[in-house]
Image 1 (spheres, rainbow, N blue to C red):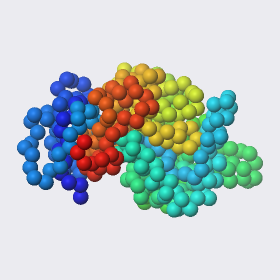
Image 2 (image 1 turned 180 degrees about the vertical axis):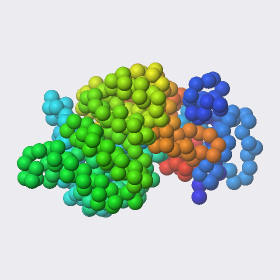
Image 3 (image 1 turned 90 degrees about the horizontal axis):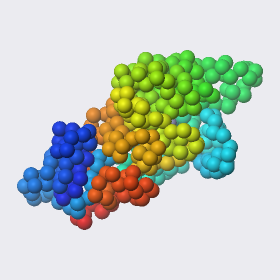
Image 4 (image 1 turned 90 degrees about the vertical axis):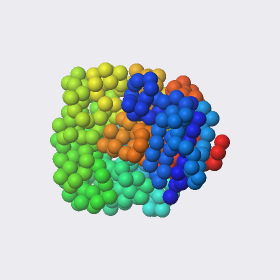
Length: 411
Ligand SMILES: [Zn+2]
């Protein structure tokens, strides 16, 4: 069990607790602060001068005036897969077009990989996430696309996170697209595949999953097909999330709001009706700047969403095709530079916003009773996350009170 720890001499502590902050604003910033945590949970937060008297057995750490922020909550990744698609990325950067459905090679490599190969890959990604300050992360299936392979992917994902999403409805697999029974009729092939997704595949995957998701987009699944998948998942006890409005305006947002989804992800192309539907719902709009970066598409307009009152989260969408970054600091830098977010809004969206997108109330903020997920930055302020893009600023990380990055001993 992690020991009781007091981190003191924190130059700037971001709590995401408006009540705790001395300067106003959602980040709840406390200067010259201290945090005490024990048994994996935060037990005290406040000015260092008011910190509880030091007792024996409490490890004392000095942050040296640096900033401490909540661990990032990455609410959207696809981390169980084989192979990579670096050549496809290079071709796209040389002018080729990105289209949904280019995942066939990843499906083949994933199916060919053994459980242990996928496990080793996952362990590497978890270390990579921690090293960049991410302490809570969601993982989707979606590169198996058969009953046995999808079951394998959610089962393996469940070994490293409780936030597992069944995404059998990622794309229609080539066995269906090219089945002579459908004679090239893609709608019929999609319908037949959805029958499998909501039947045997859902039954095999639901026990390992918390969420169901569908890729509601031209070239993937129609609104009607997506609705069948999401309603079946909800009936099996899973929470709903949606991939929508990535490549053009469509029905993804409307469907997500109607079904009470926790989050609709991408939201790159939105009508005014989409924005107002989101603003009057509990559905979070999760923006994935790594995708637009890696596919050279226009970025979503975060400013428009925030000004309309929509709750916005940022996530990496880490996957081998359209966004092979696992870095939340990178997403923050892009969101600030190109999506109209302030550094404070981008940090909030990457922590508290991600927690809301996963309907979690135990992570995403630093306050008594919550999980002790903390990141010490090698910087005096959270502003440096966007101000110093590409610089490795994560110095030490604690996940549920346990040091996972950096030296746990005194500075
Ligand atoms: Zn995705």
